[in-house]
Length: 152
Image 1 (cartoon, one colour):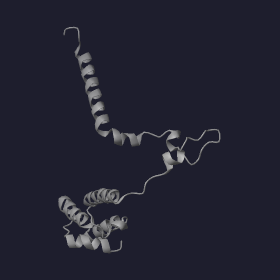
Image 2: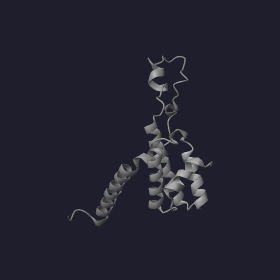
Image 3: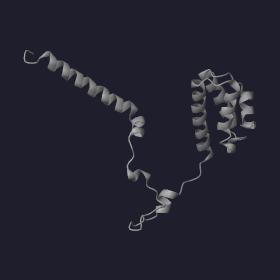
Image 4: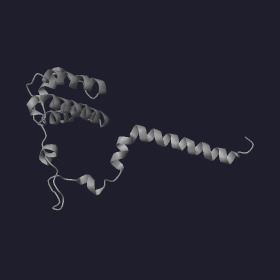
């Protein structure tokens, strides 16, 4: 230990700590950091515009352009995600009750196929639970039911 100076020890320790925190930040926030990095020219590839010199892929239409329409379960999942995000956003920005209800109505109106479906009572229950959890405003299930019928 007599061969290592305090300066060398301090620099080494600082570099090790910085490397450790860099690894932790990349591990925990890698997905968010990915959005910061600028995209390359190939990231905006569009299969509809094929270079004349380029050979099209076999079954290119089937492989890239065709997507199954969203099933009802997928729509429910998307609505739940948007409702949770919307309620969280409203709680962060302290919406007034009327504005909050209009906000929820605008989210629900994006999914007209779910109105009157078997999933509607469960979605209403989720809205009431999330509102109580975030403490935005207290909604009853009857008020949540009215959100489906009102216009944004």
